[in-house]
Each structure stands twice: as structure tokens, then as C-alpha cells.
Image 1 (spheres, rainbow, N blue to C red):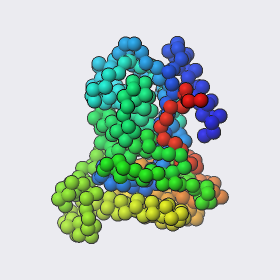
Image 2 (tube, rainbow, N blue to C red):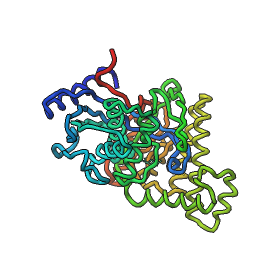
Image 3 (cartoon, rainbow, N blue to C red):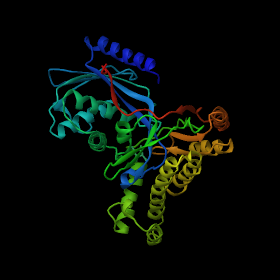
Image 4 (cartoon, rainbow, N blue to C red):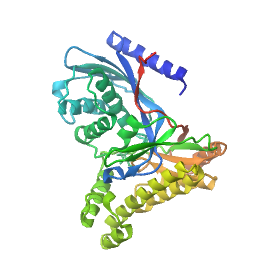
Length: 393
Ligand code: GAF
């Protein structure tokens, strides 16, 4: 997004705020969605991930109030304004999209931070239900805004942990910490190599255009959910595998072959562990390749990651598999479903000239199954969460 486009979006959300609430916002904060290059379902196993922030972001115009009332409005929501008091917040007390914002306020109060009421107006262009972290973007935009407005002085990794906690305990979705950390800590032009155990991290330069490559994101339009049983089931299965192996988390396995042999009598635990353990290796390999400038060699690592989530972790779906197969048949370097699974988006590493043909081939393959038409866009690594108005001159 150019500065001019961003200015236009900020002006729109600020004007809408003023029309809704009768005064100017104190500021506008934005937090991006993300795609994960590799490292899926490793975060709740204390493992490694490699996400990239998207230009698509949640933008939140915010003003403090003198009382304890919170008013929420969304440019995308069909309903009107949601209103509640800070004192009324209990896990689950606000339903729908507002839960992610209410949860962020709830968790800050749980931590003992003094807040006042707020007026909030949201405008997000992160597609929802597409596995691009639209919900983490909401949590992170508001946590960053509160951190600045109330002078809380919380560092970004800690804000990410708080966002995760609000999603776990307020919304009730047992997610890991990748999406929130990606939204808060990613940098423009880089992928974030993150150790989810201690949130130590490094920006890995990702100049795709400079390498003559492009990252195509294909939305299968198969909606996924995190609060549902499948995600929870995978998470508890991994925890069970770790218990059987006598380690705190699958991350702590040192001898992969010995661990898999030890799980030979438990087919499910063995499959889940194999995915997580090999996926951690794929993240490290991907980082090594990017550091060495061997961008094209990343392709087969992505495709191997897809096979692992399809065959071992069993979180793919026919639509995601078809995108991967079609993209590879068209000459893509690699492809894999990204995010929580069961649909959402597939990332395709390719050259810019092949991207339109791949998108077209996927569209006709979907049409032949009479599936919803997929959508697609090219991803460029964007900055993490920040205040976009007013900005320092
Ligand atoms: C979802 C979750 F929110 C993340 O924490 C992560 O587990 C991901 O699925 C799978 O890698 O996006």
C-alpha cells in the first residue's frame, strides 16, 4: 500500500469515527494480518515459525472516554454500535467480532492495568475466515493503542502474549502465539523467524522481487475456525504425544527417529509428532536457505510442509490440495496451505510472470468441481503494527 492509499484509508476511518461519535479520534492504529511461510501447528508445541505480515490490516480509530463505557463500531459489520462497560467484562461477555476487542481490554484489566472507557471504530481489509489472522489483527491494534494511550509501557512480545491469552481465555480459542507476534513484531521486507518458546526472534530479509519471485496467496474460500474441535483435538494430541515421550513439549525431542519409534504403538500420536518435529526442521531449513539467498530452493520445503499437514497432521482439505497440485503443475516452485488448516489460504512461491496463469488454472479447476470461485493476491512483506495517525512529522 502506498503512503497515499494509507492516508486515504486513515482519513476515511477518522471521518467515519467523527460522524459516529461526534468528535475526532485521538489516533488510528493498525495491525496487519499475516501469512505463515512455514512452521504450522508448531507454536503451541513451543516450536519455530516463519510468518510474514501482509499489507492488509485492521485499522482502529480510538478515543478515550471519561467514564467506563466502551463503544465499538465496525465499517464491515452489519450491526450498529456495540456498547458495554469495562466492569461488565467477563470471558465471552461480548459475542462476534467485538469479542476480540473486548478480550484485549479484559486481559489488560486482568493484569491490573487501569483503563478508561473508549470509543472505537474499526475498518479492516484482512479477509475474515481465510486463515490470514484477521482476529489477531484486531487484538493487536487495540492492545498497541491502549499501551500508548494509557502509557502502559508493555513491550511487543509481552503484548503478543496478552493477545494470545485474551483469545484463549476470553474468546475460548486454544491458539498459539504466532499470529499475535507476527502482527506486532514483523518488519517490512522480512519474514519473522520466531522461537515460540521464549519469543526470541530475528528478521530474515525477504526481497522476493529482487530474487525474481512472487508469493501468490490463493483463498480457497473454505472457511476455517479455531474455536472448533479439530484445532483443539490436534493440540491435545500433540500434548499427549509429548507426555508419552516424557518431554515438556514436542520441541524438546532431541532424537526424532527414536521418538517416532517410541510412538510406534500409537498411530495418531506418531503422525502428529512426525509433522511437528519435521516441520520445525523445515522452518530452520527455510531460514538457512533465505539467509543464503537460495530463495528458489524454498519451494520444495513449502511443498513438503503441505504433504506433512495433509498426510500426517491431516488438516488439509480437497480445495487446498487442488490449489497445491494445480500450482505445481503450472510450474510453481512450491505451495502449501497456510494457517490453522481445513481451508483458508494456500501460498504459492512462483515467478511473477507465472502467477496470473496459476490463478487462472486454479479458478478453472475449482469451477470444474462447482466449488466457490477462489480469490488471489500477491503478498509483499509489510510492517508490523503501528500508529498511522497522528504520525510524528
Ligand atoms: C492458527 C493459530 F491461531 C496459530 O496459533 C497457529 O497454531 C496456526 O493456526 C497454525 O500454525 O492460525
